[in-house]
Length: 330
Image (tube, rainbow, N blue to C red; front, side, top):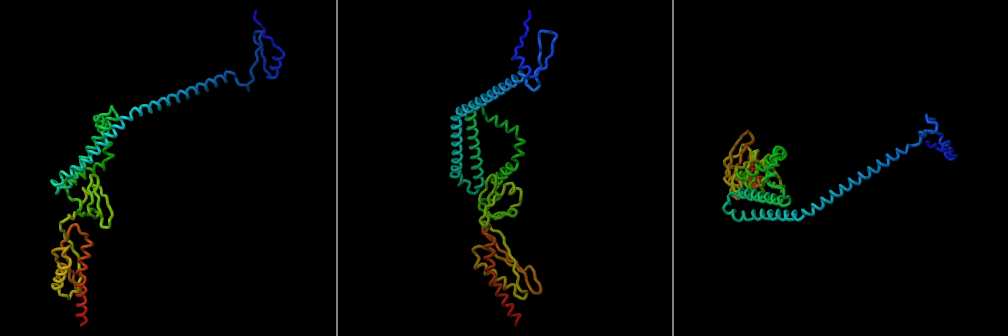
C-alpha cells in the first residue's frame, strides 16, 4: 500500500509563506507544489560549482605545466653552461690567432710587398676574417652538438635571395673595397678628390675609405662610391700642375714682368714649386691677362701653395702698378 505524505503544521506554515500554487495530480494521494520563479533551482548552484572547480583545476594544471617547462629549461641551460664556456674560449683563441696572423703577416711580408701595401692589407683582413669565421663555426659546433657547417650552408642557400636583397649594399661595398685594394688606384697618404670630398687617404678598409680633410675632419666614403665614381688622385711624391691668373696694365713690358715673376718663384718658392711658366692669355686696351703655371708636390695643400706663390708675386705686381701710374702721370 503506498505511503501518503504527511503535512504537518510547520510544513503548512512554510508553504503558506512561500505562497505555492498547488495542483492536484491524477493521484489523489500526492500534492505537487510549484517553486516560485524568483528562487534559483538547486541544480543551477551545482552546475556553477562544478564549472568553478573545473576552471581552478585547469588553471592549476596550466601553471604546473608552465612551471615544469621553466624548470626543464633552467636545468637544460645549466647542463649546457660548460659547453658554452668551452665554445667561448675556443672563439677567443681563434680571435687571438687572427690578431697574431695580422702581426706576423706584416713582419714577414712588409719587405716583399713594400710597393704593394694595399695587397698586404687585403691579405691581412681576408685572412683574419676567415680565421674568425672558422672560430665561429667551431664554437657553434661545441655549443650546439647537432649543428654542422652543412646546415649553415643549406640555410644560407635557402635564404640567399632574401640575404642578397638585404645585404646588397654591404656586399657591394665589400667587393669594391677588395678590388680597390688589389688594383691600387690610390694608396694611404695620397690626396684624392671624389665628388665634393677632398682630403688625404687615412685608411682603406674593405667596407669604406677614410679621408682626412685639410681642416682636420674625418670623412668615411663607401667603397662602392669610390669604385663607380670619378676620383682625382694626387699621388704622394708625384707632381701635378697648378695655375693662377694675373692681371696687369696693358702698357707694361710683358717680357720683363714674366722674367721677374719666374725669377722670384725660383728664388723664394723653389722648395714647393718647380718649372714655373707664364704666358699672356688675353689683352685689352687697359689690361693684360697672364696665366702663371707651375708643378707642385701631390701631397701639398693647394691653398698653401697658392698662398706662397701669390705672396712671392704680389710685390712685383705692386711695383709694376706703381711704375705704370708714374708713367701715366708724367
